[in-house]
Length: 114
Image (cartoon, rainbow, N blue to C red; front, side, top):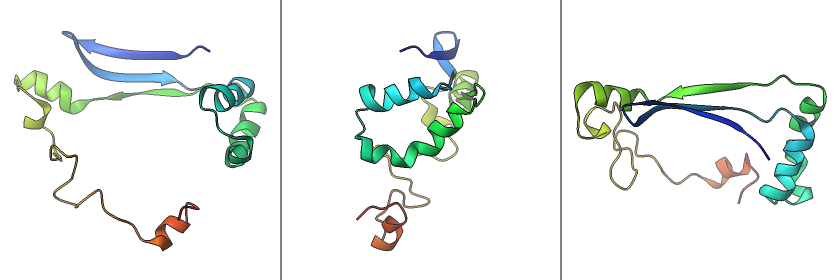
């Protein structure tokens, strides 16, 4: 398998990263089968993706900047927690929204979960 991943590094700190996504149906099927070991019956929900790739979907990708990291570096902050817009607790909870939270069985049913 091969992939195209890239990072933007400033003074030894990663401030952005991205990749070119898989755009070959045979390679994507192999990832489902070998790397992720998704059973064939569970792969049904991905058939639209494989069909699109077989039709010749173009390569696509992107890059995401860690603006919080960049701002922390510019400000000389010890941690991104000093500049992050929506900080989380050490346990990963968002005190403004209460996330993560428990969802109802009705909400789970949308995703075929119980």
